[in-house]
Length: 247
Image (cartoon, rainbow, N blue to C red; front, top):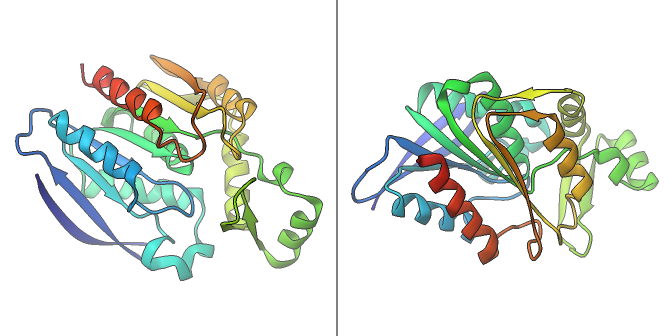
C-alpha cells in the first residue's frame, strides 16, 4: 500500500488530497470518500472504506472539505455549492478516470450534485445518511431567532452534546438544492439510512429518493445504524455495493 499526499489550494482554501494505492491496481476505477459536515477523515469509517478499496484493487482518495480541518476559521464562508465546486475542481484537475463516490451526510449530497454535472466520470454513488434536510424546520424557534440575528448558531444533535455551526449561508444553499424537483443521473445511486439516526429521518431520505431518476437506485434502511453509519452491517452493505458497481 502506497500513500501520496499533495497540497491543494481551492478558492483560498488550503487542503491535502491523499491517494492510497493498493499493492496491485486491478481496477480502472477509483473510490473517492467525502466526509460529512463538521467531521473529518481521521476516523474509522474512512479507514474502513479505504481498506475496501485496497481489497478491491482500487485507488482511494480522500480530502478535507473547504472550511474544515486547517481551514476552520473560514468555515462560515462555505456552503454546499463551495463543496460541490471543490469536488468538481478535483475531478477536473487532480483525479482522473472513472470514480465511485462514497459520501457521508453532506458528502453524499456533494457527490450527487457534482455527478449531475460530470456524469461521464461517475460510476456509482453511495450516500450514507444523506437526505433532504429542512434545517429551519428542524431548529427551535429560539434557534431560528438566533440564526436570524447572528447569521449562525451552534446546534447539537439529539442525544449528543457536541455542537456544530450552522450558518445562514449554508442553510440557504441547502434550501436551493431541496427546491430542485428532479435529479437526473447517468449512474446508479444507493441511499443508506439508519433507523437510529437522530438527524436524518426516514421521511427526509424518502423525499430525496423520490426526486432521483437514475439507471438504478436503491434505498436501504438499516435497523442498527445511527448517523455515523460505522456499524458492521452498514460497512458490509457498502462493500457489497462497491462490488456491484465494479462489475
